[in-house]
Image (cartoon, rainbow, N blue to C red):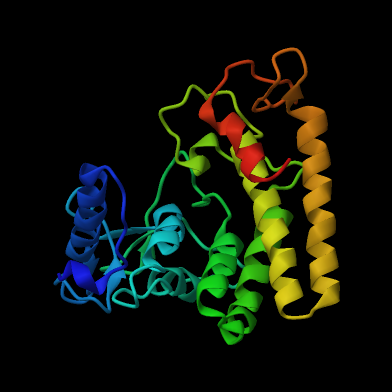
Length: 259
């Protein structure tokens, strides 16, 4: 890898600059052709788990925010497109796949393979780096089906989403009684907000209005049910919709959702 192929940063702390340059080198080491297991810049960005080639939805979404700065040395869309291609008839996209078999990786704590729903955020970011409106139009049916799948299967009468706390990926947090995780619900609000923004890009006023309305609906319920005015913090809810008074980093997700 030639570091001059990538954007340069100028900062007074050379150690910071060295870490940045080294990061691109590490990225290239895990850019792999799933068919051969060999390094390939046109493959997928995969970090092996226990000797298996596992692609992770959460990591793929957030890696796209970094890969857009690679001066096209790495395609920021490849991993996202892999997940879109695995979408099932009802709209489901699972959180982890074994790329050697293209099958979902089962997890008894998260049997539906849920992950934080942030595809629309990633696509919005990609658009503002590439201005590729055609891509937004092509992926929108997939994004709509995915959001509808979550809405149909996990939304409850209180307007919030009941999912396993492990769907957030923060398995080391003390959240065993959480039924309505604050981070997952905040991410649904984030994704709804960016779905609305993508609708604006497509000049689809109905789509934009639908998801803007959804965003404010989730926002209202998070503020009314998950916010504790005494401690000034957001909390998960248990089965009875009682706030679990254990502070975790999940309580900061509403800030990213502008709630």
